[in-house]
Length: 452
Ligand code: HEC
Ligand code: HEC
Image 1 (cartoon, helix red, strand yellow):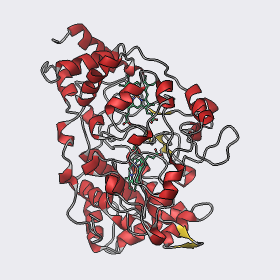
Image 2 (cartoon, rainbow, N blue to C red):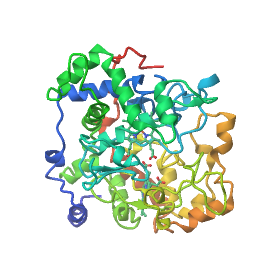
Image 3 (cartoon, helix red, strand yellow):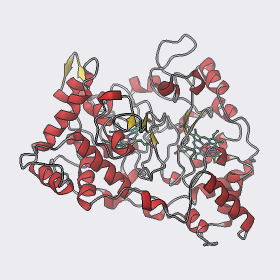
Image 4 (cartoon, protein in one colour):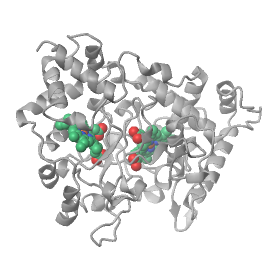
């Protein structure tokens, strides 16, 4: 299939409508960071010092070797050991009490200015009207000085008992950070202060904060180190390291007719026309940054939501949790599809293991929901965790509620066209993202182990 100039113009027009220009590479308005800031962020991202029990880092769930996710349908938080399907669920007092209720998303391109809403439900988002500049669950407690939405996001995993802060066992917190995080209401301001104290106690961190933030009066004893600066550095590292905008699709748009295979070009045409994927996956990064209900299977412990009179909290209402608007029930953010080949399992609860599976979902979303095959779940097994995995999926009434809310019914896509659409999705892979192993530091500044 040769390049059809009309088709290329169609894509260009579509990109322009969404405010994207492929030629003015948007690096101009991308934030710039010093090498010291990126280096500091890299150490912090891999350092378990940021978790209450010093047993989990950001990288445990966003690992360069698993496409900056964790390779699991649902993450295993603090207490777990190892990576991907070899990650275990802890033992003894450290045993994991619940799976994290959502899939760990990949972190590609999140430094691009158009990414203003983070998390599957968009609960951390740019809001110039808010004193801190961001909406979040912390409300007025979110401090000033956060440079961008990625930095605002980095304030939160450390405050979550299940993810990084640590749990209470028999009424006793194992560490002061867990005690603050589990207080009612949670004392997240103390969590941030306690973490800053930990960093101030490590000379190598003091030195690196001084070179990264020379204008912030970091004293020789570390005064001036705050968790806000740590979050800014983590964001600098994420934005710098995980750009992914040099895929065959990009090269094709820039005029290289041979960058994509014929099958990928056919798939692209289907994506933009018959499949109507572009209705939601629009723009240069294949996302409208909006929220839609697409009849996705609900797996795992849930986000505490209840409908139909149930009181077990096993459901996840998605965007409704943020807006409190029932019209947003079961809506989740449209993910960017950059590097999607590298980031299985897919969607908010990791229901789909393969690209073929998720694209097939769109042939008839409600039918796919009802005939969902849970064999594909990537969940390290543990009897009490397993018991909650399929509570919603094994209840026809709860599934019917998810089906009723869906925005997409049948697509005109045919079974035999799926392979081409998948080829197009593969053409969104930036070859520089295929082996991110170089990102992994051999040591971190606390001296804690990087590898378990
Ligand atoms: C226990 C696993 C776990 C740990 C540890 C963890 N994350 Fe995550 N991360 C997740 C999950 C799960 C989500 C999605 C949560 C949701 O949407 O409700 C997420 C979401 C994110 C997002 C939003 C991505 C997007 O596209 O919206 C960013 C950025 C991120 N994490 C960065 C970090 C950083 C930085 C740290 C360390 C300070 C960290 N994470 C620690 C599991 C984890
Ligand atoms: C009505 C809006 C809408 C349409 C149309 C749509 N999608 Fe999606 N897509 C979404 C949403 C929302 C999600 C995330 C759902 C969730 O997290 O539960 C998603 C998820 C995905 C994912 C998983 C990405 C990841 O990282 O988890 C892929 C792949 C995908 N869509 C491809 C397609 C293709 C191919 C088409 C066309 C056949 C399409 N989508 C049509 C809204 C849409």
